[in-house]
Length: 214
Image 1 (cartoon, rainbow, N blue to C red):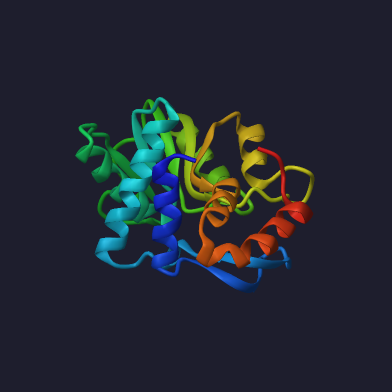
Image 2 (image 1 turned 90 degrees about the horizontal axis):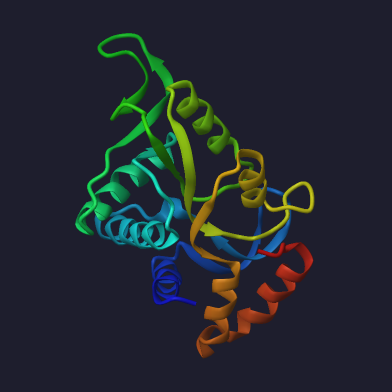
């Protein structure tokens, strides 16, 4: 497990974005852990998060010309990730969409740089894949090409079938999906953290019941 993945999990724990206990997922599953990227809500945490995204995106090798953030969570992520990439010496434009079309001024649903070239979609997680589907449609309608999807955490668990939501997106749209960290990384982190080792058995059992290979 590379250092930035370890560092990201520790960071998420420190910010209480990643927690252990008894939680119920949207799918109705009893989960021993919970990840809520919406709790990255101050300047320092978003700054650090953006740098993790930039590291993950750069390490992925995905080729892209610009970033797109689907409303609403993706808006701040697209802006922040583009700034972190600029810190690394790569200045790329970004755009995002509104949920409702604007009927005055410049109008439309898209804000920011014109969608063109290869476009990397950035979001917090992939649950049902709805925001990715809508983003792909917007990007293609503008004559641009989706290049991939970047997310914070891949839970690596089955959706409605045998594949995970991430795997379904990769299959349905033929797009690479890169996560800052995934469930394998979390298990590795727990195995190397004596103070958190008590959670390892529960998370491992959850993966055995609902997990996918990847």
